[in-house]
Length: 123
Image (cartoon, rainbow, N blue to C red; front, side):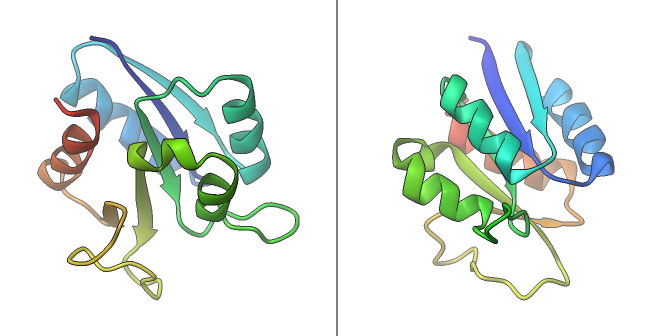
């Protein structure tokens, strides 16, 4: 099975690291990347067939709407495919114990990251 992933983060280092981990974790993976909330919205409007959405919690659009709000408000059917990537120093809006969405806090280990994304993709 091909796993199709959309990574939304404005940090190119995160894109590079996530790309490497995804290639290690999945045998057959297609990775698409966006650097802004606007590009994220446009990508989902043109194609919503992703198995996994990795989103940066701090990414906002021009109206300051967070990327998570975009998913919840505009693409609610995709919520089960979302994992939130968040800076460890950021004030956490989610708690791994009670969060409705999986959270990956930076810096993360390969095992931690892989465990979260495999659960979402049911691999």
